[in-house]
Length: 334
Ligand code: ADP
Image (cartoon, rainbow, N blue to C red; front, side, top):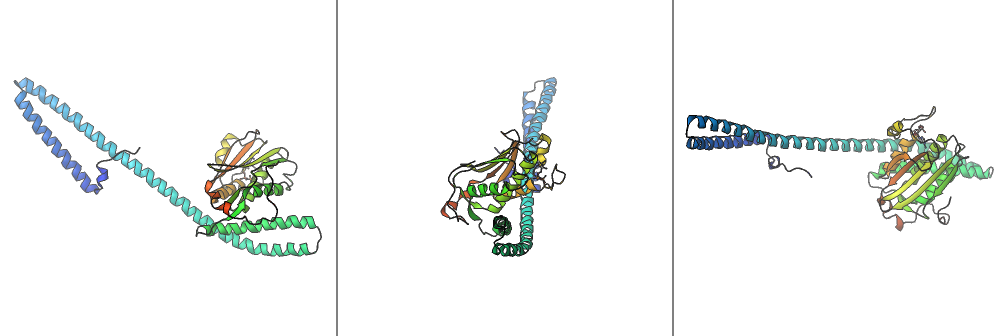
């Protein structure tokens, strides 16, 4: 509970406040001196008794003024430290908001350039599609290009979100299952056993392409940590505190002393690593107002968990998510 500061809450300037304290002090001490001298003169019956009483008067004066000095300096120092804490938290908030502004600007600029290049790529895939050769491969290429295109659009949207444009409505469960399906195609993940556990449907408001990238990064990291063989468990659940996306693996986990660096940009223990995978996961979580954390998992390896706030669900259930071209999936499945 914050301490009450009777003097400081008067909101006087420093000069007036110091003057007021000095005048109050002088008033009290003069009054105390006069009263004490009067009492001593009237009580003392001998010179010796008077000297003794004067000594006790002096001691009482020193003790009481020390008490007052202690109280005033405590109030003042306490107030100073509270102000310092308040200022430092404002400073941090300002830095964070500036960083977000810069990140949004950068995201929009990168997205703009990527989109131009992607248009050419999409046109080429369309051309291939028309030849009806390698139908399955072309379809896969199509899905990947679509996913990248959507990601780029959402990257731009994150910048615009600051100006009030809302994120899109999507089925989180479906995005998780689709991402795992795509992730399994990666050569490093192919030999791993990946299980998925999600609710039947979970309509949310957010940036599905970023969630796909998030899962892709988690899967790839797990597969790399396990040397391409082992098990990964992906689970999605919702409770009153929010939505929880958890990825656990049977790899070696993260050494204790490396944990604090995990989500810092460019932190990597791999020879050819970029150290941007977990950092981008953190950025994606924060773009949704969420958080990502690490802990040793129940499968003996790493466990990463992303928490999304309950407000991601707000208004989403009233909408039909984008791209609902097939019937909704039926229940949790491995
Ligand atoms: P990169 O994969 O390029 O190294 P990341 O940011 O994705 O970058 O990962 C940073 C580091 O975190 C990795 O180099 C690795 O040491 C550690 N890490 C990430 N995921 C796992 C995991 N599932 N198991 C063990 N270590 C992991």
